[in-house]
Length: 234
Image (cartoon, rainbow, N blue to C red; front, top):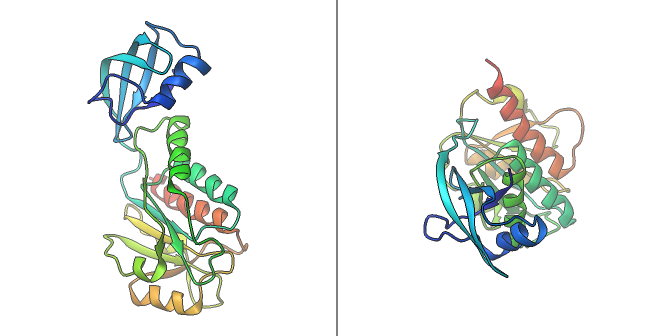
């Protein structure tokens, strides 16, 4: 069944214009067809199309279904964006499909990209929750300087993945099952040594993601998947 993102469906019985056009012009659905909606806040809605016009699609809600996320802990990935925007979008899509609660893009000393258009990333997150049949949209934060970010409070384990030859554990060994986790992933030139030291000062544990030197977006995805794998073990 087709899924449509309708964040205001409880205030309006109408699909957002972009979703309405996709429903009626692309998929060519008609009145009385059944569709599934999500508000991005943990709920699905079974609905029936009641009226269609050139830019509008009205529905009647038939059933509200609460969907709990299949993981109990909070996962927050904070990544310095790559110069190539396609790779940032790929990261956002795939990490949402795997499962993440919050995403932050970091401005670091060696960052090659200093700006992110949140509107484009938000659309990718919406498409990804529909693709992976999730009812909860990850929280996307505005781009923030690393120095400010590491000073914020976080209830859970805090990690920074870097490539320096310094003592550090594998994330798979350092992470404690069931705990909330936030993982910092640096730019293609890595974090500066001063940034690593600052993060450690604020309680971040340095970790490795393995022997291979990974691209930024691959490292972020690996970190997220590692947390899920550990929590999936009985």
